[in-house]
Length: 217
Image 1: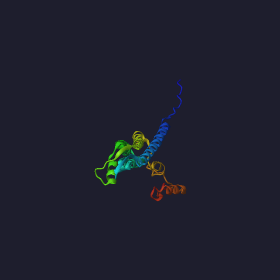
Image 2: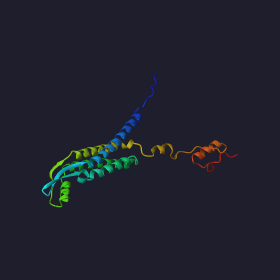
Image 3: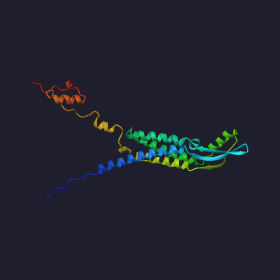
Image 4: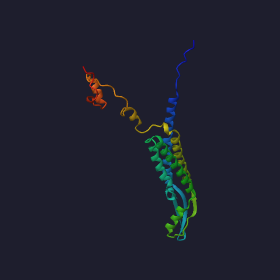
């Protein structure tokens, strides 16, 4: 006589749900934080120098948006993609997640490329001195381009999380569709002799007069 094996407990579903919630929270946090860092750091001074004016020198400074507007623009794209990830499903979600990752990558590359730029200050020197041949002297760069790049990497990480775990994330309106949306199953029968059935049908948005009339005698 063989013993009946004990019932198996499956913990894979709760574990998957917890993992999905953690990945959603991490992606939202990284994406929002990264975009905020990029937008703030892009407005800081990236380069300083001087221009010769009338035998003296005029201090000049260029912020990130003067050097390149790409990181700030891609940060805004990344924020929009981060929201859109939860509004689409299937292949559309993968495409939006890819856009999110690419916006972070592009912002990081643009920030690093602008870390040693001098064209913005040369242009400012020419404008200030009204001499098209004027160039900036004593050029120095700050660490803000690299701070911008770090923020962009956070956006990239958010996009990679969406690509890896996005299939299991909920979508906007998903709860409504499960709980309050129209049901596709067969509706419950309505007995015209029972007022409670008529009221339940009306509450579901059905017309009980168009259903079966019940048993005929």
